[in-house]
Image: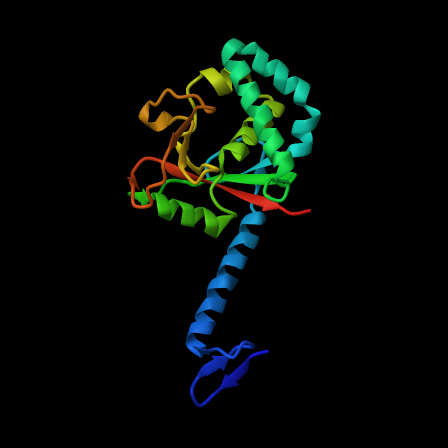
Length: 219
């Protein structure tokens, strides 16, 4: 229960604290805006091909049913594929153990780069506004497996240069910053599955990279 003191334009909370009515309204408007933004993004087109500016669907049930196919595709890449298969298995185990974070349905989103630069912190804030934060390495491994389920080859994911225009920035599980894939726009030859790791420096500025967001779908 809240008691509005009109004379002083303050709100008394249930614990007895008084806060300015204006501050309460600002907080409420901010929460409402964030809720509306996330509801609007969930209505956007969901695709089976990873594209800039569109939500990509990850269905963990489909991944589980296609484990043999994923393993076979990884085997096609020889030693490189074996390393990715091991990485996938480790990520799948984490996802099973932390099912509240890694729900059965997850959507990911690559921002269209329409700014001069962003700091690492600004990128993380952008992902919180549109979804549930930046993707981490487990979600990225789920994405790669989903792409195999959708028909992409080992060569496409592990060997060939990424077709996406920019490197994607993610938040590692340990709090650090990760860099996924390559940047066709700048002639970067890294494949989609390539993952770089660094510490998190909130004020570091990026001119060419773009954030990679995710959103859980609760059952």
